[in-house]
Length: 64
Image 1 (tube, helix red, strand yellow):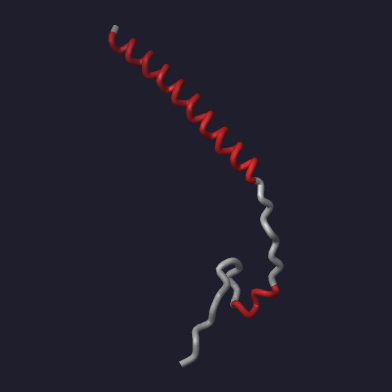
Image 2: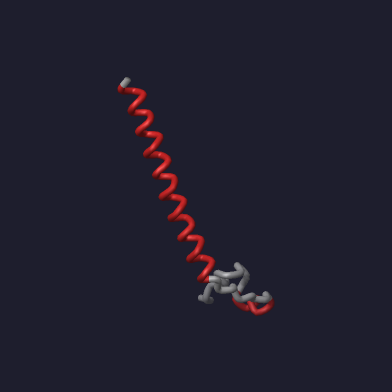
């Protein structure tokens, strides 16, 4: 029984043809990823504040 054909997970090609594909290294931008995460957290905090203000206004309108 022959061993089944192996495929590369990165290219999807058979392993023996994987050498034909040029592989480009990804640039590491840890600073930009960290900054994007911090921006996301900041926007989430601002959104929560706006929601809480809206909720208070709605509650005050409902109580009157």
